[in-house]
Length: 215
Image (cartoon, rainbow, N blue to C red; front, side, top):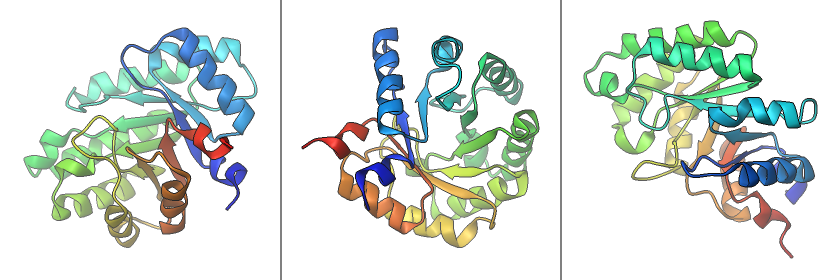
């Protein structure tokens, strides 16, 4: 697969809590240069990016990030504001405490609420696989499917581990036909990107897009 083709699947990402506008602006310039699927950025920068790049950049931002255990009402408000500021895609983190308590229906209701708010905009659901058992991962595949979300996503990149190819296979077996897969966390080489795309991912979250074009 060509570097250009791989880049078209990448959410070019910078989510460090100390990132500056200069770094975010450079991220946007790289995304345009490399023709990535989007930039994935903190919500505080969404409006400024939209003003600086009003037409030629897909903006993804995060909600309930990175821990996920704020309440649904807070996530709903955060999503509404991000969309109002110009976000095209929302990557939200599930409430892992609800999963651990076996309250899968509550997780599903939260996802359905956020998808209703997103409407035709893309909702990606981060389940943070490193903290879940296989049973819990399967339950989250079903919750994401039933709620009508667009993507299931492996990781925040801030947990104890990132993406794992075994989890991609598990997701493929348990999500509905309309749900896509995004892998994120620790995907830093062209070889790894190719592996995840070959495994069935439709998006990759990575801060390492530039490695594709290094001579």
